[in-house]
Length: 203
Image (cartoon, rainbow, N blue to C red; front, top):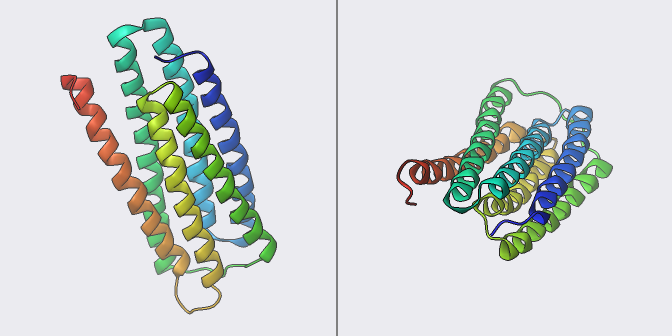
């Protein structure tokens, strides 16, 4: 059963993701790294996802019973739409960077900061894991899976930032496309699952 502390969990997730968004946006623009920039947009999408999660949980508390389950499922569905949109954004911009590469400014300081954000996301994923364990919900399940997936996405982004100046290839764009495909496929699977539940009440 969803409890009020779960709302605060959504608010905490929103705050952390927004801080990560601002951090990565600055580094992405300063270094001209598409992979880092797209990763920042992904964190912005996660910020909105957490806002929707908090609102969905709040609605669930008011409705209760079966209506509560449907409200949570609807929230998860909308969150997945946001994530899928981020994935498609990655693919589009990655393809554009492959065809029209731009110089990247690599910095050890930037790399260290981005690596630190990976550990922040791991901690956030663990946080959502324990919240979901205490108050099971498809909303938190989606958020914790997305948090761990984001760790790999950020890892790819930092690899792109590191390699792009060392090999004559638009690695930045390639990594953005790969990350975009991974995000989109994962989100679409969740969209299909939640759509099935909303329509037929079965998963």
